[in-house]
Each structure stands twice: as C-alpha cells, then as structure tokens.
Image (cartoon, rainbow, N blue to C red):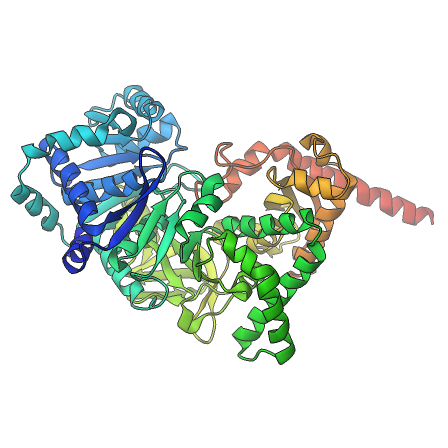
Length: 599
C-alpha cells in the first residue's frame, strides 16, 4: 500500500461520500465527494506528469491552509513524486535552504507575493534544481489540468501504485527552536500504517460520521496527519486559513471533532470568560467553570456525587450549551498537541462535554506517537503508545520511541541520524515518565532545563503553561539559567486586553507601554504567578517578572509556526531585559536588607 490507496479505497467503497466542504469562488460552502476529489487529484497529477515531473521528484508547496493544499498533496503522490511543504512565514534564506536541501524541481505557491519570494530565493542561491514556479493565483491548477491529456490514465495508475510503504512520501522541515531546519524524511508507511492503526483505537472519535475544520498550517506534520487520517476514515474536512474566521466557520460546518495546539483551546476559554464579564455574568461563569472542573475530576475518579451531578445539569443549560453552540454545537472530541495542555483547561472542556485527547509527538514521529485514547483516558498525561509504537524512558528520563510512526531519518545528515538513534530507539529530547498503566507524562525538554546558580534544575514548561492560560497573558518565558533565582518574561494578549481593561475601569485606549506597568495589571499577573508557584517547589518558583511591551509572535521570530517558544531567540533579543530584571530584583532585596538592619 501507499497513501493514495486510502483515497482509492474510499472511492471504491462509497464514491458519493463527502470528504471535503470547501468555499467556491463566491465564498459559499460546497461539498466534494470522494469520487470528485479523486478526479480532481488525477487531473492535476496527470498535468504534473505531462509537465515532466518524474517519479521521486520533489515538489514544494507554499500556501495557506486550504482545500487546494490537500489536492496538490495527493496529486503529487498520485504522480509518484514527493511533497515538500514550506511555511508561509519562511524567510527568503529559509526557502532557499529548503529548496536546495530537498532538491525540489517545482514549487507551487498560493499568491503572487509568495511566487516572488520563491523566485528571490532561487535567484539568491542560484538554485539550478528549481525549473518551474507555479502560482494558484495565476491559475496553476487550470494550467496543469489543461496539460493532463499529455499523460495517459495507464501511466497515472503506474505512477500512483508504484510506491511501497518504505518509499519517501514527504520531506517536512522542522520549524525548529534552534538552528537551521532539518529535513525529516517521512515514508508512505509512516502515514498509511500509523493512520490505520490509530483509527483502530479511535472508534467513535474519527469515522464517516466525523467532521472537522482544519486551521493549523498544512506545512506542519500535525495537520498533514489529520488530513490523511480523515481520508482513511471517510470523514469530512473543511479548511480555514484565518483563525479569526474560525468561530463563524465552526457555526457553518458544525464539526464533531476539533484539533489545535493548547493556545487555541485557551483562546476559546478566554473568549468565553470575557463574554461573561461583558454581560455581567462573571460570577455565574466562574461557578460554572468550577463545577465543570470538579465534575470532570469526579468522572475520571469513577464517582460523581449526586449534588455535583445536579449542579452540572443546571449549568449545562445555562452556560455549557452556549459555549458548545459557539463551537458549532456538535463537537464531542478534540485533539491537542504541540505543547502541554493545562490540566484545569482540559478538565473544563471535559466537564462541558468535549473530551480533549492530548497526544505527544514530533515531526519525526509523524505527529502523535502516544494518545490519551478514550479507553484509558487520564488528564495530565499524553496517553499510551498508539498501536504499532513503543515508548521507553532512558536512565536520564529522556523519552525514547520506536515503531511505525518513526521517520526514516534526517535528509543528508548522517551525523544527526547517528546521534538521534540508539539501538533502534529514537531519542526525542523530551523528558518524561510512565505511570502504572503505561501512560506517558512529559515533564520537560532536555534543552530547555534551566540550572540556577544554586544548582537547581528547573523545567519551564509547567510554570509557563499555568501563566499562559490566563485571559490577560499571551506568552510567558521562564528564565533563570545561571541566575540566583527563577524569573519570567510575560507578554499581554492584544486581543483581550481592551475588554479586560474596560471591565476594570481602565481606559481601553491606554497604550501597551503604560499597561505593562499599570498597578492593576501587575497585581493580576502577580496573582497568576502565585498560583503557578503553588504547583512547584520553592526553589523552582518565580521570584520576579517583567512585562514586555511587544508580543512574541511567529512574525517576530520568537515562535515556531506551531506556537512553540524559540527560547534562544528570546534570550538573545531580550538579554538586556533579563539582566535588568535581576539587577532590579537584587537592588530591591538589598534595600529590604538595609531596612531590616536599620530596624
């Protein structure tokens, strides 16, 4: 088998089954059946073959998340070629490196501006391997379709069916929190076997009855995995390139299944908090949240007290149903990955009726290697290894994995491959532990561990997740390497700050620079930090913090496209801010000592 067989099986079993809902030229949603999608894929694939694409050729895709992205992905596989996704946020130098390292022959972009970016990258490095740049805005698909008669149906079938499970399907370049992106070579088997085996334990979660709205970057392995697994299951997928449009699209599509990174679920929760405040219902909402969390904890423990069950029923009508309606009204499950999801957030969603299946994985593991599957669900863990895969914990607590999901290696980097594998196990670089049921809990990342001047090892993730979950906070970065104590850099959420200020009598037009020093803002942040500190030891607790006047974003170069902190870049760009944080704290302690001495 290969990935294309998953689509062929859907067509053979139920050609009329709806696999996609996409927007037409007028912006209206239209359904696409399995048979129609296969026809469109085949036409584009024949056009690629007719244009000279050979089996094994690499083809770059630079586009926002949209239906055409998946169409191109499958057309490339039908043509026997290899897809190379490129993030929209990539710089000229990053694009040049990916095209050079992958040896891409053709690149397909969404916009004219992206086409120009690729052209600059090709020119800057004089890349002779890139011979054609096509653009969706300039009718690239129509051009390929017109070329389709140049390749026969027999030739297409030979190309489509030639790849085996061991053959290369895609090269995904890690966005990386450090260094130059590495090309992860993922095979047809990585996707095909992993998707089919995962479906075996996802009965009732993903199937023909399922639908979702994809909004994560399609260049990321997580979105690619979900895209393929939904085709394998016969579920329905819609795409939205703009997360600001997400709520409206959820209302239109009414999905049963959501996926995202923790920040997405935090945003949904925080939007509900602000809406309740604006309607003067913050106390009711706060009680509803508390009941949802306690209800989820009780369900997990196996016993729900009668009184709690009655309260939950009341709030289901008053509060939870309205929040569910904002997500389309049909959502029963969600998948969260990329970074840890706060336990309170997970319990809240579970308590209102959305089971968030938190998983753990990397680009190198074709997205999730473990999953909090319904049959052994436990919030606070990332679940058990998915079928066909194994997890073990090394002596230094590093998480090691092996199985059908593990990639075949880094492209052209034998020294990295030698370092990445030990006795057939892939070294993830993450730290973790296994509970008695075999569920994995991630405790930190080896490269992120801070060692204070006092020799205390501190894992930043737990503190950062607790702080970032608040409605006022956008990002949090814990610092303290070689320092006398742990500190933090915090940024405010520009989308929520105005509403938050208005509810508290602060002029919503107040400049961000002033808000970073506003007494009410600082007190609120200190309360958040105090709650976060309660989850760690005193030596690991945050003693001082600074509020930055600018946010950390993908565009600023401080976040990866999957919204992970690029710690080295943050420490480099804000080194003086960090120095000032410790200088200020040291001066304050010195003053306090002098005052005590005077007493």
